[in-house]
Image 1 (tube, rainbow, N blue to C red):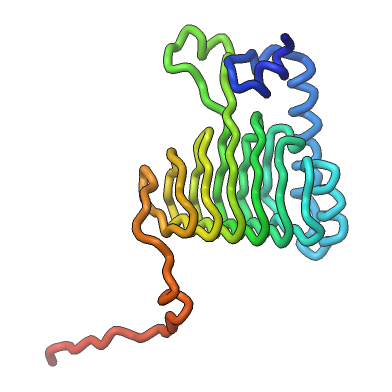
Image 2 (image 1 turned 45 degrees about the horizontal axis):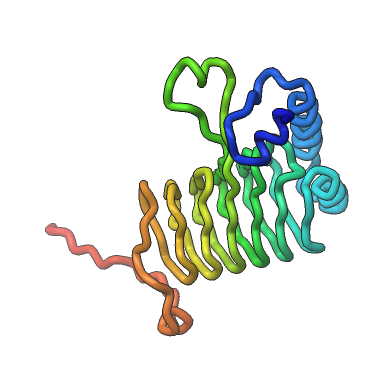
Length: 204
């Protein structure tokens, strides 16, 4: 069994010493570097780079400069996908996003994990478990998603959350570790977002 086959089966494999995996990562890293040198206005060129790099995409996909991944071919994004700057995807296993996914700045999706014992970890062994995100999911700034997690459609993951377990559909989830705060309800569609300055009085 090749190291890539082990990687794809979610069992321990040698990530650091297999030449074919090293070459695949080098290709993806080079493409990411070239992508990140583009001017923000070069939208057509950016789209072309993403189609070369990613496993599959919708027609309307935007990732802002500052994007890094390990292989690219394991990343699959749906229609109207948007990711702000600083996105990192360690796609040793498949990372799949549905339609209308919105990702805030400095988020990470990490399929790779390592043994807890130092002996095997220092040999370069690791494992990779897939991450799956449904439709209409919004990730706040700085969210980190860990190996093997599934996030249901129509959910919101609050800024700074570390997602270590599955999140059911239609949830507002926050925290480290991330947990469900509440369900999204019909009442949320009637919320009026109005900023009101706090009133302060001072003694003279």
